Amino acid sequence: MMGLKEIKIILGSWDLGRILSHKKTEKGVVNLNWIVRTTKGKYILRELGKSKKLKELKFELKYLDYLKRKKFPYKIPSPIKNRKRESFIKKGGSIFWVYEFIEGRDIKRFGYPELKECAKMMAIYHQIIENSGIDNKTSYSDFAREEILEEIKSFQKEIGNSPKDEKEKIFL
Image (cartoon, rainbow, N blue to C red; front, top):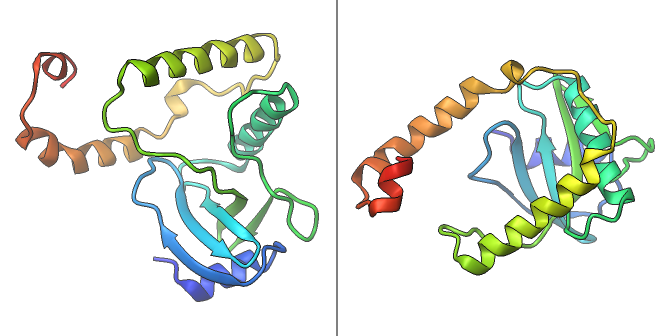
């Protein structure tokens, strides 16, 4: 587990102010994330998952930049350039990037308003991306299956013990 000392070393590559607090996030399948509060704001420090390659990160950042340039109306991660004007750094065999924390809430169950907003967002997203020409030329078989299976296993105990209504039985 990465501690304050390591986080200070990594974040020293950016001009984000003095660290006030940090906390590793509990969720995430592919990457490792830390919420970091500094004297200049609140950020996410993201470590690229071991199953991901630099090529995939570059594709992801290009994709996010495209959405931003096309005025995608929802907040999305946008990399903060480091002191060398780069989007990421390599340290100790890992790759890190930073973006401003995006406020939100964890929705356990979607109600109609959330579902409607999600559908609207996906429609706008697909309209923007459809003609982008962006392609990472990677098959879906390269996706992080092992990490996803591990996370699913961690939830099996909780899922197995919770009461299920008819809708949940269909998906579980």
